[in-house]
Image 1 (tube, each protein chain N blue to C red):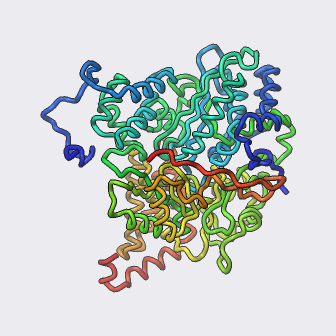
Image 2 (cartoon, one colour):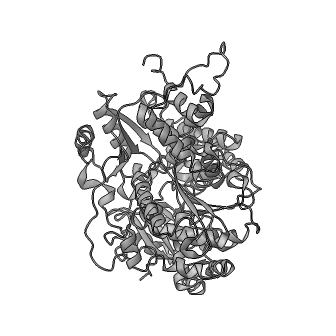
Image 3 (cartoon, chains in turn brown, purple):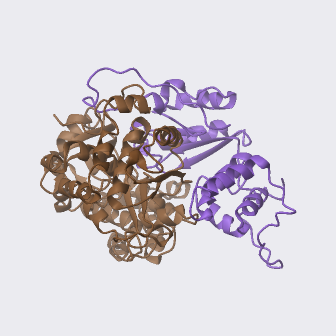
Length: 425
Length: 212
């Protein structure tokens, strides 16, 4: 049904070793790329129209081309801090096919002219980091990473850097600060990392899945890759489906597949006898869609048109047995905990949103609170250094707009509960 | 121990000036820890980038980021303890007060909570309540394993989907150093996409606990 580019035979025993990876044609894409001019490698990436798989969906080839030309030290950083709630695709790639990521990084560094690179992996991914470490040692031994790679004159150092548990470090400038050994506070943009990133040098930052797609593009050609999917969303995408579905997990789909097909066809839909109440199309920071919006094609622009986003490709399904207030509270509390506290709208906005939701839960809210809460969200969006605050404001605003009746009902029934219950709750 | 028992969450002593970079002459640093930190420092153009791996190494040795641990890291890296304290308090996996030997992170984020994670967390907490020196039970933010929901990370080993009945065995496995819930480890699972593999492959091997 859907072509498997990243997941083809991913469970083959030993795929994480160099021997099996090479037997399956691994590092052939690197040889092909190193025989080409870096500009032509970049050309392939651009013609593939590959959009970043981490959340923002920016075209990867364009991002590479933004790096300044010249002989200054440039850096390539792989964002493996996968921490958007609902997302677990990079985990599967790194654990089972680590050489694919390493090969992608060497090719990308060649196109970008970078000779130092880092993988910033979240500290919780112990197994995946250990697997990558072992694969890196093999790749260094075989001359795929290090000085004068395969006699091409291109050199690349690659260091695996383990984080220590902070959602905000998945934000690219927070990640850079963390990689420099500081608290992971986001930076003001511009300057963008392409100009001033790691150690103030030009830096290319890409998600694991994006970099893993690079060897695939080199193998089949950028133009061929662009044939897959739909016009503005090319190729295949790993989708992590979780929540109240029968078969949660990672699936590789062709972009543009109907969301209903993914949620019901692949993941089996909600448990027997229940229906979809709402679903997050791109991690918990994306505005929710309802059951009436299940036929939206799953690609960047169709989801944007529906008022939400593809994000990291993480679908979270909530069925009709779950009160919407519980969902809103979970989401808001998470972002309150993870706000770094640097920008006031985010630090205060996440805190007050949680407090107002708790007032609804306790039956102390008035109908006006929903309007105030909605306006708080408006004041967060676009007013901070990074999008963490927006990441709470967008889903909460959409929940208030789409489930106003249910929230009001909850408010009223909580208000009418006998006082004794209120005290103990 | 008692002086550290309250961790870092205490008022600063304003009578004293902030501590400077520890004196290498008078600060004793275990040789292995020093070697590991220096190894990390050599990996980066700016040695301060080694802060997180260095703190992680010190925590592994001392059990938490104690004042003594920070002093040793600060000495090797040539930074002030306050700098390290500022970093350590930012990250969830760096402990700024003494904790139990085995870390058990129960994911309570949205995908896990939709599948019963809150009740699971309560059950784990209750079961481990009598042994604060043995277990460090924490409700954690999304651990990136929503396909195993509800799940937990036991000394770095991901297990799930968990049921309340699994809790005693999970704690017993951790306590005795056995592979934790061998039949429920993420490491052994095949991908969910039924069309990813062109033929049938056997499940993968177990993962050993990384510490404890």
